[in-house]
Length: 326
View 1 (tube, rainbow, N blue to C red):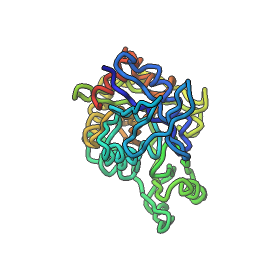
View 2 (view 1 turned 90 degrees about the horizontal axis):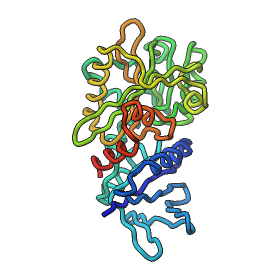
View 3 (view 1 turned 60 degrees about the horizontal axis):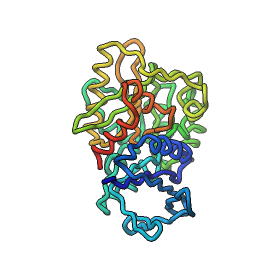
View 4 (view 1 turned 180 degrees about the vertical axis):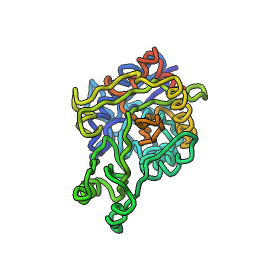
């Protein structure tokens, strides 16, 4: 008997277009012999299922069900594909926990922690062979810009603590640029992370769990003509070169896989995550950047690229993810 899966997309952040495209990729690659997929759109106006042959149907939030042609549909599980809030910060996970409905992403606590870049770095700091850039976490109502100038060295990255897609992020090369960068970041969040720049090669790597085993996908090396891997570089065709699998020595590959598996375990992750990191020039040291607990799944996103590089079909990949978490 098929399981009913709610494919949850949309959201209230600036990343909703990517969420919708990600959901389309997943819907096209789910095994329809095993799963009946219902695409549910979350908007500021409500939660809706919109079948192709009728008008949209509102979701009953009391038990997260829909009624289609007089038949009530309840869900065996939820595939969350909402980037940013409320899909990636633990809000929806807490809601589904209360209803007892399983879902594909990390739990509410892990999602809330990993949405905050500063808190995440504090948790993973101490993992063997993992380094974090020196940083300060600032709060909008009480920060002192002099602390940044006294404690950190240029150049700096200034980014909202809770957010994604590098929205509100700046690279600061002089302290004269610092205030405007802080204003830009604080426009997106009440907490801002300021960290020293690490000179190195940038990578992004997917991790998931299947049959209780943590599996690390082939990594992607990111080369951009922009100043850094910002929003435009991520979503403008041709702005970056993405090499999958990215080149690493055998020693680097083994070390990276051990580190990211340890991050996955220490943060108590579930489902698919993507970890961004630098390999520092000259030393090869691993520097943790951030973790994305609901990474993009568009046809050109890192995860589908890495699944293909592993020699796996997306349908088999999503089946493994669903069977592990639902």
